[in-house]
Image 1 (cartoon, rainbow, N blue to C red):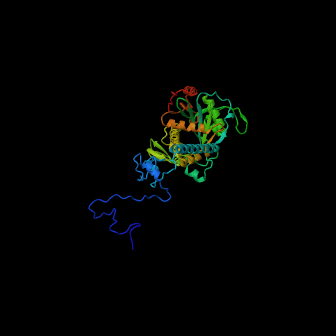
Image 2: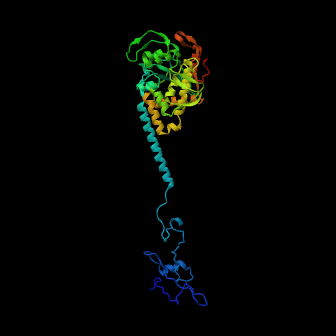
Length: 419
């Protein structure tokens, strides 16, 4: 059987390319032209034109087409050559165009997410306080003034939660802390109003009953809220300070604890050991992360490690709220939906604001509190001159007037508290 390829045999006389016994070298032989099936061959005229530049060697087939250079000269150059003599005609990727459309898609997605989040959060705001019914309001100054109130409301809390948080089960709600936050061009200023402040509650019209009360009272500040809620508290603060309140924000015990837990706790540097059975506070000195239950006991404590009772407690409240705002208003929370939505949900469900409060105003308030924490603002107590009836605190009115004027004029606050 012939095992040689077609056209070959084992004849020793035909051993071209295999060596021979002849004394001289073999002569060149013309090899048959091969080409891929389906590819037409070149005519002799084309072969001659492709090789002969005037020498007349028309019998030699160079295998090159007219004007082509091996490995190049095609549509796409060497990278488009497919190894069989053909060239890839597919267009190259337009990376610039792809990047542009990718960027546009990203912007649209982020914009849609932002708008959706805004309307979701806006719909959850409890705009329940109508400041337009407050009577005899002072003229507005420069900047924006927020009255921030922490109430002892137990709304939505189960009996077990009340027990765990040491809140008791008192009906209704009272103010547990009050602060004026001024946001202006010269940095924010946070002024705590001790709930035991001795003030004058002016005549007022009931926000729900519509009944007018002419009797002027001298009593503790938190009595105003107990009598007619937020509208009378705002009126009393404005009446005693002469500073117009632009926005109101209030949060209860349960909401406060939930916000702290939603952000993963808040780190505080506690200056001394604190143990108070009334609030449930039990802390060792030093830096530590407080969860919602611990945070609530810390800001409510007024019997241990607070110095002068209510004044010491207001300082702790300022420090904690500023730290909470500083930790909440961070990229790790704002840009992380798994932290942003639980945090906003926990706060917005229990946060009560005035009817004109927008999310923009609310954001401005939190970022101003963050600035206070970072040292870009000022925090202080309302200046106190001494004690008053019922164990209350008497404001230092000359300093109060100077402080209010600086806030109205949006100037840097130079007034200091003696406490």
